[in-house]
Image (cartoon, rainbow, N blue to C red):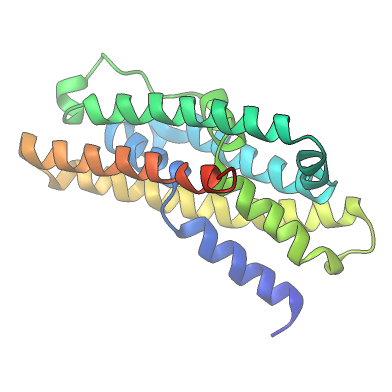
Length: 199
C-alpha cells in the first residue's frame, strides 16, 4: 500500500470512530437535524482541517518544547468537554427541550476541535507519520488539510444524520436518557487519553 493510501485509511478510520466531535455531531443531529446542525458541523470541520494544517507546520514541536502549554490545553479541553457532557446528560428528548436549547454555533465546534485530545492525536500523528508525502510544510499542510476536510465532513455528517435518525425512532424518556448519558460518556472518555500522557 502506498503512503498516500495509508494516509487515507488512517484518516478514515480515526474520523469515523467515536470521540468528542462525533458525539457532539450526533447530539446536535438529534436535537436540530442536519440543517440546524450546519453551523456547529462547519466549526468542527474547520477545526479539524486547520489543526491538520497547523500540525504540518510543526505544531507538535511547539507543544513538545513548552510542556506547560500542553498542560494548559489539556486542562481547558477537559473543562470544556465536561461542561458539554453535562449539558448533553441533562437534556431530555428533543421535543421536550424545544425552544430551550439553541443549536451550537460555528465557534463552539471550532473550539471543541482545538481542545479535543483525539483531534490532536489524529493530526499530529498524521503529520509525523506521513510527512514524507511532501517536500515542504506548505504542501504537507495542503495535503493533510484536504484529506482531513474530506473525511471529517463525511464522518461528522454521518454521525449527525445518525442522531437525526435516532430522534425519529426513540420514544420513551428512558431511551432518551440512556442515549444522552451514552453520548455524554463518549465525550468524557475521549479526554482520558490526554491525561495518561501526564502520568
